[in-house]
Image (cartoon, rainbow over all chains, first blue to last red; front, top):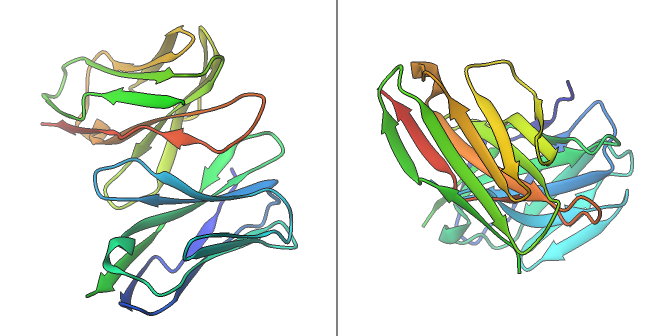
Amino acid sequence: GQQLNQSPQSMFIQEGEDVSMNCTSSSIFNTWLWYKQDPGEGPVLLIALYKAGELTSNGRLTAQFGITRKDSFLNISASIPSDVGIYFCAGINAGNMLTFGGGTRLMVKP
Amino acid sequence: SQTIHQWPATLVQPVGSPLSLECTVEGTSNPNLYWYRQAAGRGLQLLFYSVGIGQISSEVPQNLSASRPQDRQFILSSKKLLLSDSGFYLCAWRQRLKFYGYTFGSGTRLTVV
């Protein structure tokens, strides 16, 4: 099946710093999604990207749909303690099937 | 507005016992419904999805089954639980015609002992 490689797997970040994470695939996706999961909760959709090259922001979060349609990145600016959690990318292919990346665990030092 | 309900939130079951997890969606009709499992600290694995009443597709052969007896109800079951069935189970839905992303329930933490 399709694979999404998400990196980094985990990271510590100093409060106030910016953080970047990305997902890459050998396959093309028509839609990219970014989710955040808090401990013991279901993932919550942060940003959805529908067109190649699209750059979308949601508060301190910015995500882009790669031109090749095989990658996407998420940036978080000025991180705060509540940014802690696991961030998942997900891609939807032409068959409308959703594939998740392995997640990036973000830990913020207060 | 649409909401998704999943219960129970936590469950501890002995090996060999049956399982029934329920998920319901409100505020929409004809949703696509999904069951995912997440092992500790890992990504999400699609178990089943349904595009309509009585229509179930299985992604991974295993000890579990799913049913959709009503349009907005999705049930995950097992006749005999295994230790390896422990995990965090998530139900999700999406609109079939207009796509606004997948919305997840709050999850069920299942521990098989």
